[in-house]
Each structure stands twice: as C-alpha cells, then as structure tokens.
Amino acid sequence: MPMSQFSELLKEYIKKKDITIKALAEKCGIDRTYLHKILKGERKVPSVDFVENISLQLMLSTEDKSRLMELYNISEMGEDVYNRRKQVSKIIHDMANTNMEDPDALTFKTEVDIDSVPEISIYTDKRELRKNLQVLICSDVHNGSDIQVIAQPTEFLTNLLSIAAEGSESTINHLFFFDNTSYEKNTAKYNLDIFPFICHLAQKHEKYEAFYYYEGASAYFNSTNIMPNIMITNNFLIRTDSDYCEGVIYRSKPMVEFYMRQFEKFKTKCAKLLDHAVNILEYVYFWYDDNANFIGVDFQPCTMLCLTEDIYNAHALLPADAKEFVKAKLTMGKKALSEHKFVNLFSEKGLAEFMTTGEIFELPRNSYTFPTLAERKIMLQIMISLCENGMADYRIIKNDYFAVSKNLCINISDNTSLNIIARNNCFSDFSYLKISETSLVQAFWDYFQHFIDSDAVCSHEETIEILRSYL
Image (cartoon, rainbow, N blue to C red; front, top):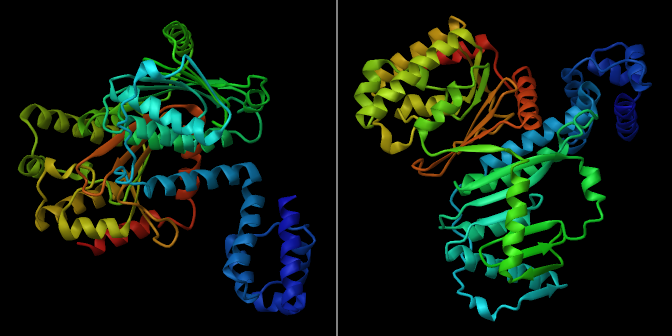
C-alpha cells in the first residue's frame, strides 16, 4: 500500500509537470521500463538518492519533495515504525527547545480561607473549574501540602502542576497508565504521545514522582467512568472529567482521608517511571550501572573519557571525596568501554567550541576550570585513539539533518534505560532523569540505531578525519 501511494503521487507530479516518462527517465539516467514498473508499483524504489534525483529533475517544491520522501520512508520502514521514529524525533526537538527556566510561569500565592469553601462545589463551566483548581491547589501547596494525582498526562495538567509546584518543596505523586498493547502493530504511539508532558514536569520539579500501570488505551477511553481524574491535597478532594471541563471539589476531611488510603493502595500496584539525580555525581551512577551498550547524543563530543589524571586534578573544582569518586567512576567508564559498544553522536559546532574555549558542557560551570589549548589537544588525541582502537565510536551529526541543542544530552542504553540531561542557559543547573519503561526505551533505541545508519551521520572514517583536522 505505501509503495502504491508513492507511485500514485509520483504519477500525479509527472502529469502536473507535463513531461513524458521517456524524457524523465533520460533526465534521471535510468531505464524507461524500470521507471514504468515503479509507477505501476511493481518495482521497489531503490534508494533515497533516487527520490532526491527525480525530485530535482521534476523541480518539485520543498513541500512536494517532502511528501514524496515521506511515502518512500513509509514504504521502507512500514507506517507504524515510520510514525514512531517521527514522534521520537519531535520529542527530542521539543525537549531541546524547552528551557528549564520559565520566567513567565504564574505563581498563585492566593491565601484561601478554608472554612469559607463549601463542603461540595459542583462545576459545569470549564473556565470556572480550571480557575478554582489553580487557586485551591496552589493555596494548599503554598501552605505545605503535597499533591496526589490520578490522571492521564495532558498539557493542562502539566501547566497546573508546574504552577502549583513553582518554588515549593511539595512532592507530586502522579499515577497514570501506559498503553500495554505492545503486541499490536503500533507499539509505543500512545506512550510517546504523553511522555513529553511527563518529561517536561520532571525537568522542572525534582520532587515530581511518576508512577505507571498498564492498561489498554482504547479500553480506558471507552470506560463508563465519567470522572476519571482525581487530585488530593491536605484539604481538598477533586474529581473531574478527562478534559477538565466539569468536576466536583470536596472540602471534607473524611473524604480526603478515604481517597488518600485508596490512592496509597493503588500506588503499590504501580511501577516507578523515572529517577531523579540531584547532581553529576549521582548521574554517573545512572550511566555506568546499566552495564550495556550505549548511544550518547550531545552538542559536544564526550570529553569525560578523555581526561587524563593530570588534567583532571588540575581543573576539577570539587571537594576531595567527590573528586576521588568521579575519578573512580571515570576509571569504571573506561573499563566499560572495553567491554561494551559506546557510540557518541555530536555536532561539529560542539567540537569546534570545545577546541576554541575548553568549556566542557558535561559539567556545571562552577565545578571546573577550562583546560588549556595544549590540554585540549591531548584530550582530542585520546579521543581519536579511542575511536581508531574501536573502544568508542565518535560520530559527527551533519548540521543540515539534526539540530543538536546545547540544552540537551541523551544517553540511551541497549533496551535498558533512557538517561536525559537538561541544562539551563547558564549551565549551572542541570536536570538528570533516568527512565526505564520498556516501550519508551525501545522506541528511542530504535530511533537512534536507525539514525546512526542514515545519511545524517558521518561515517566512522569521516569523523576521524574531521577530528584530526582540529589538531
């Protein structure tokens, strides 16, 4: 079917351009019979280069070429795999362009007289319900309340919890389901759809605890439960419909306590989705304890494994015990390289910036001083040596294909875990997350495996040549 769709679209473009198949075949340098068979859907399109060439000869617009290329990719991968990879790519792009700092975030400091709130408030107006949710939850959190939530992640819920938790020490316990229909064709679609909301909140609030259980998405949304969303604070029990258009707010201690007991029972049946690390030292545990093959994607090449003991001792601004801890972990990392495959994807701009300034994006700026140019060259030589000896596979991402952000680093292990570092603009605050849910990890692992093999990434040999040019 996708091949047929490609053929039909190509025939439509040929007709619009008023060119004969014979003339087009000659322009493309291919046999006319071969092109005829492609247009009939009897022969497979040979490569991306064929699509590029025929788009050039037909002088297609960028939009028309994209449509043709999309159908080619679908015919190669299958629609489900293509859509899953496209969704992962969008998630990475959105995460890279979301700064941890949000100067426009609203903070509700409204003091609410609890006794003045009715025992039961019923809302049928969406705006009124949402306004009161913000005021009551933020007021309770401001007075030290934690938040317990059973609801599917949405943009509204993420914004509400972000506003409520802003500047507080309150814990958010969030229970939701992941689709468990992995035996069907469209493996991780629903889980990938809701993952950005979870990840955004986790990056903003270290005390956000996410727990999941498995459920069929279709079964859940076809449920007759008309008030599936539950929120509990110290003083309020809130139940709403799935869209936060209608709901009921209870100010009743017995109701709050009853639902809290039920919440805790339900929580024991859920699995923890993510772990936070509070600093780079704890994050190092995340990375090396997986004991698996790794793919790392960052703006800069991974320089931590190229630090000699002398350079490290000269530049690390850490307490003595922390310094020894990191040194031990670096030794473990080098050992892990000899036992597992490590592919490091990065931009040439990141390489150039490291060689020009000596800044190491893997570390907060207040934890080290910049290596000298001579020391940077030593580190680059070690990087080349690791690459040539097969201990690490450094690969440069071509800038035209993939915008690598300074604000984001992703490490993905072989179907084990997804590790995410989000940096703010001044690189003094980092957010470290580790996600182990199978469908998410597999989707990201598949995406980067495919990405490495694509035209978007320089070959092993090309990368070594570029690295050498910076010496």
